[in-house]
Image 1 (tube, rainbow, N blue to C red):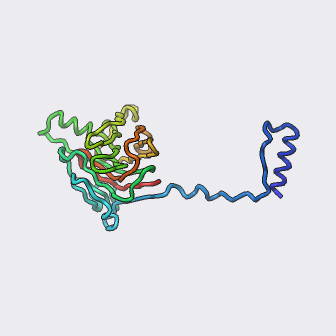
Image 2 (cartoon, rainbow, N blue to C red; image 1 turned 120 degrees about the vertical axis):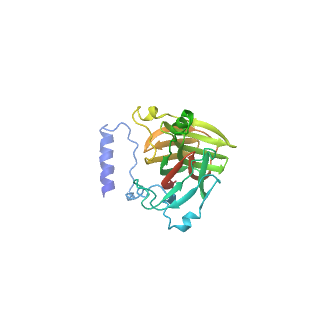
Image 3 (cartoon, rainbow, N blue to C red; image 1 turned 135 degrees about the vertical axis):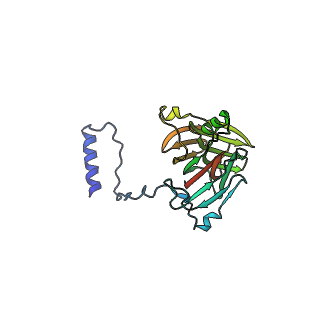
Length: 248
């Protein structure tokens, strides 16, 4: 009955010239209930909050032989890690990119989100150049579409002054985007050590979008890698990771 009433109204409107284009077809079939079509949300592919008691998840992780990776419970008096954290405890500058990654599942298009904080200590024995490097370059972040330990994309914090998106190709680093904090913080504040930051990447085809605390900070188009492993990384610093979530 409702469909017939709608049809009558449309036909009357067309006859009176009230509609500019009267090509609408109204069918007598019942209107389908679409209330729940979009309520399921993105499909979760992988999630880990680094609970030390979850032995099955622990077995899925491996690393590139650099750093000192360990999942443990509350690890400091700072907020966070109440349920556990993944900690990389080495600041060895020779280690460069220390990577902890999941071998399966691998992903192509999707989103990866992780929360982390990095830390460092300044020594009176260090030169001004060494101190500046710690403040401007070290950090922690996300690895994605990783083919092997020498070929992958990376998005990470870069010291107190910014973030960096790039790729490793046969062990050689290539910047894809390296915005300084002035580009996305309007010159206010710095990225502080021992402060929690949420990093997120969304990869669709050749498009890569990167977010810091839900704000877009850098994007790029690159066709080098289409599918691969994912994980976490530190660069010349210790860091804590509170969780990682991966969705389609």
